[in-house]
Image 1 (tube, rainbow, N blue to C red):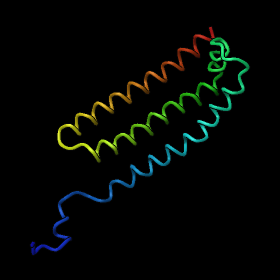
Image 2 (image 1 turned 90 degrees about the vertical axis):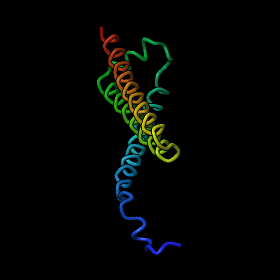
Image 3 (image 1 turned 120 degrees about the vertical axis):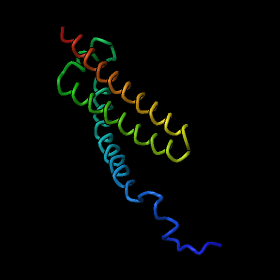
Image 4 (image 1 turned 60 degrees about the vertical axis):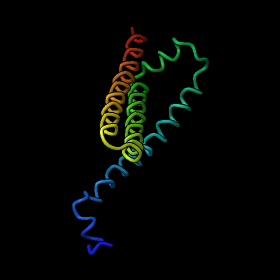
Length: 127
């Protein structure tokens, strides 16, 4: 039995206010994925056939390339936020820190790779 009040037991254990920003960021990223994802599906279904040349020409259009880069970056950002929550909830100690760092590196590599792929296809189709 402890003589401490519930408030004094909790003091010094960190702030309970920091999760709201993360929660809002994840919800806004999900909200941005919806119209971008619908645009992507609608645009791909509108292509006559899926040959590489036709898709490359579609990606080479500036509006499509910009929206595709936004889709890739938004999906990766949303994924990063979601995995961060899972890792923070279920891993502890040094495993949590190492996994968070590796996850962030992985997401940065995926973002750079996704943007590079869109730019490469778009420049290759334009030449």
